[in-house]
Image (cartoon, rainbow, N blue to C red; front, side):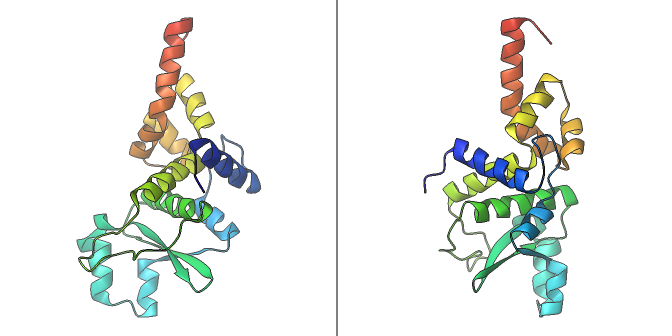
Length: 188
């Protein structure tokens, strides 16, 4: 399917509504995963599944920045493995990103990590999943309202449980719209 931003916004809105949330409510991505029957495991929990200590240390500490989360097929089921070495706000956006892959029905055609231990991914699918994460966590409608209300990145981050960097990325377009309206209509 060809996913347009409009269609992705509609999917995100439907998912939020199914959880009883409006555009201005904070979404819990773990609750969304649970609603879809997707269990979330941390790297630390995988130690109980015989993940080697070296593997855990590699992704948890030594190369923590190289890996955040992954949606993994297990037969007909799906699970998400997250890097619990990251801050909660980053983990929330990572889970929303992986749920974006699930909601957009992205295929599992390639391996997660190559032989060089670097991520292998489809750039178009990653962009779509990133857009979905943004729309799930800080919908465009909420971003526009925050922009018109002159909310700072800190306020948006606090209200929606995201990092200030994530808030800034989601607010960029909304702030342009608010600034143009302000210049055109003389308010703000």
